[in-house]
Each structure stands twice: as C-alpha cells, then as structure tokens.
Image (cartoon, rainbow, N blue to C red; front, top):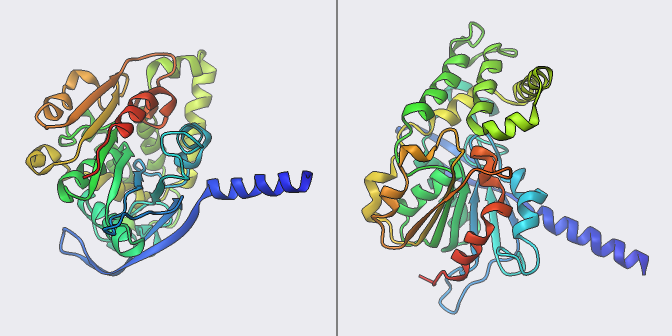
Amino acid sequence: MRTLVLLAALATSAAAQGVQGDYVAKNFRFTTGETLPEVKIHYTTLGTPRKDARGVTRNAVLIGHGTGGNGRGTFLGRGWAGELYGAGQTLDTTKYFIVLPDGLGHGASSKPSDGLKAKFPKYTYDDMVKAEYLMLTEGLGVNHLRIVMGTSMGCMHSWVFLYTYPDFMDGAVPLACAPTPLVGRNRMIRTAIMDALRNDPEYKNGDYTGPLKGMQAAQGFLWVMGTAPLNNHKQAPTRDSADAVIRGVVARGAASTDPNNMIWYFDASRDYNPSQHLGQIKAPILHINSADDFVNPPELANVEPYTSKLKNAKFVLIPISDQTRGHGTHSLPAIWGSYFRDFVNGLPER
C-alpha cells in the first residue's frame, strides 16, 4: 500500500512539472527584415489538448512570462500552479491544455547568448508573438486558444495576440501592463538598464568575455521596477537588512543574466502600442493591474480609457494591501483569482 501511495505521488509530481519540448521555425523573418535559418521556441505543456467535432482546439491556454523569465519558474510554482491547476481549480489540468513557452530571446529558446551575441536579430514583441503562434499551430497542432494570458511582458504579448490573431482565442487575461506605448518612467528604466550595459567599457559591442560592472546597476533598476514600497519596508525594516537584500538581489541577478540577452529583451518593447489596433480586437478581455505597480501606476490612467472602448472588456485594479507585491502581484492568483474564475466560467466559445 505504501509503495502504491509513493508511486502515485511521484506520478502526480511528474505531471505537475509538465512535458517539455522544442519547436523550430525554419527561415524565420523578423520585423526588421533580418532572418535566421532556424528559430527555436522551447515550451512546457500540462494536460491534453481536446478538439471539438469540427476539429477546433477548445481547451488550450497560453500563458506568457515576464521580461527575463521563462515558462517554467513562476508558472509551475506553488503560488501559481497550486492556486490554478489542481482538481476543481480554474485551470484544472485534467480539463485544460496549458502551454508555457520560453519567449524568443529567453530561457531555452533562441537568444543572443547561443552564439550570435550582438549579431542576433533585434526582435520585437511582434516577432515573439509570431514565433509562439507558429509553435502553437505548427508545433503543437493547436488551432485555437480558449485563453491567452500572461504577466508583465506576457501581459503585453496577450494584447499583441488579440489584435494580430483576433479570431484565435475565446478570451484574454493580461496581467500587469497597459495597452499603450512604453514611455515615461517605464521606458526610462528600460533605457537606464540598456545604457548601463552598453556603456560599460568591457561591453565591446557585445563581444565581452567576462562579467560587466554595469550589470549591477541594471539589476538594481530591474529590482525597483518590479517591487513595491510597502512590502520592501516590511522585508527590510533596518538599514543593514535593506543593504543586504538589495546586494543579494543584485549579486544573484548578475550571476545568472547575460548582458546581450538582457539588452535584447528590454529593447524588444520599443514598438509596442496596442492602442492603435483596438478596432481589430474581438475577444473578451479581463485586464488586471495592481495599484502599487511602480511602472503601471493607476494615476497614468492608461488602461481603462482603452478597455472602455472595447465591446467586452473589463479592467480590475487591485488595491494596495499587505498581500500585494507591486508589479509582482501579477503572479499571485490568490489575490486576483476570483475575478479570473468568474471570467473563465462566463466565457462563451467563439
């Protein structure tokens, strides 16, 4: 009996980690006109795809990660998967087919550090979404999505999916972004990160051979971008603890981040602007932001004026609390999960 329980636990654990694979797009053309003979998109899937009598995939959910992330970290952790994927939960993996891609330039997908360094094409969000669409349709045989959703960069990719492939999904759930150009403080921080790396004397036009001192500043900017004052104050209530936290964050980030990769994935947002394409959007939308988001603060009023122009779009602003984590609230479905469940349960097929 004990052996059977152990085997069942191992099987459940393996299923929770998903199935990994790679899709390779041949002769991929970027929006810049640059081409690569092969572009690889790595992905993880959970569950099984199901098609209706007409051959339309009805249970696929694409979840996009944030800038610098990958498809496995956050979305397989307890805080996300434990709230969404279990039996009876909103994205129960016995019912849904979850697809977690590593975005172009990220994780185990094609990126500058694979060898091309600064010669890697300067991709945009349009290129990243195109690569994921090909991965879904040609690689996995998914011809329709129940939901496209994502956090931060994945939030913005959800908007790009909405207007680029308007009939491809039943609904979308962007988490922590805005459907407007990245300007103001958001762009300023991105530029500061890129300049800290490019202007480092050892950058050498992308042909660096060791760590860059500029990476420390870049990681510091990134930390500020994604955190919130209330939680930071609780996390580090003394001078020494504050110093230790930020230095630890910077050291860990610097040790695990390639400078060219970082420049490329921040620069990819340069042409993002869904507000110009609202007329092409057809699917229902649930857009969720948090009031303590440092780069998407509510005073900018750059979400609701646009969602209000759409036929079936709802904007939810999560108020600041002891539970919110600024921009990072996007990865805490325990906070916004009830809105998400209601949206999914009320979503018609298209």
